[in-house]
Length: 62
Length: 402
Image (cartoon, rainbow over all chains, first blue to last red):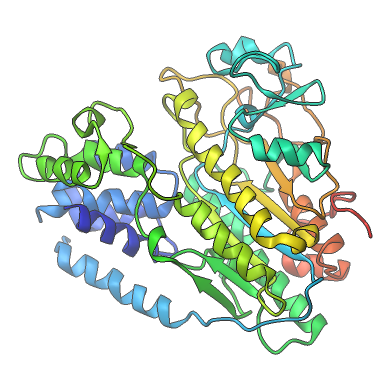
């Protein structure tokens, strides 16, 4: 799991533009939990927000 | 429409490969006395009032008594900057540089934009404009300077996994990422663990993996605490990158401009305990730069800047929220330091921006332009190319004139 999180963080570094919330909504739709949405909203950078999305249980379980 | 996870990741992986292949390792440049510029992006919005605290302003404690550190001279107190401002005690190296006239904090700065979204504001900060551009202001500056010096290759260098927007654009730049820099920091691990805490499969898997990697009290972290490495076995990623950057900038024909970044500034909760770690990283990193640059330190300016400041009032969770005015740091042997720059706007409620934020009195672009013009000898007619949009008046007196 930790290796997945590390990888998610590295991949997220290469997303250059756009709103991470759009990616979350497209990828997960209603499956996105409010907790993950809040954590992403509070993330201080695009990379951190996407790493949180990719490491969330709802994303990992899809 | 739903996109399966693997398809979503595949799309991102493709952009990763393209991003990688677009990077070129940049060439070299002139002599050992060339001016050097290091720009550090503090991602997540640094609370300027905590980094450089105006303890002499009587209104400060009325908004955030619980966040204000003791005055200089007391235990755990601020490091004095001339009687009105005090530096956060985690910034001891910067305080030493201030004493040597090599550190200049500039207070109440903000970019020209007004956005409280991290992602938007970071885009604007790096674009150097009120909108997101496809290139960053530092890359455009490199383009102009290359032409001036008639150099065939670029001389910019991005330290980290990717080239930040700040340094992307037409001019060729190099990038360097040591193996040790490729992990999230402890704070992000804590947040990931919190998201997975109640999942019967991923929760225990994360907890055990973090324990195995040496993070203590993994079971407590999902209660809102922060993961703390049991012992610091190696320097943090920023120190690592700063050390490497200093070495490369010091070589006679190496790069002359470098960009770095640090996260962890978004202190919505428990700010008092959280801010020390990123500040100490910044402090150690600048110390490492100085050490590795050696003789070249006297030709160096480091600019540390953040996308916006934080609210003057403390919020309900011991933190502060997205604001406007904040502080920027200049450090280096070429800096005309030993004082605090900028104009203090005051903290009375009528003086706050939108009755909540420190009112900005200095355009951050003017600080950057002042360094580019007086330190890197960017022609003043090129300022409008580097910072398109509303006119910028480069700030004077930021660097020592030889």
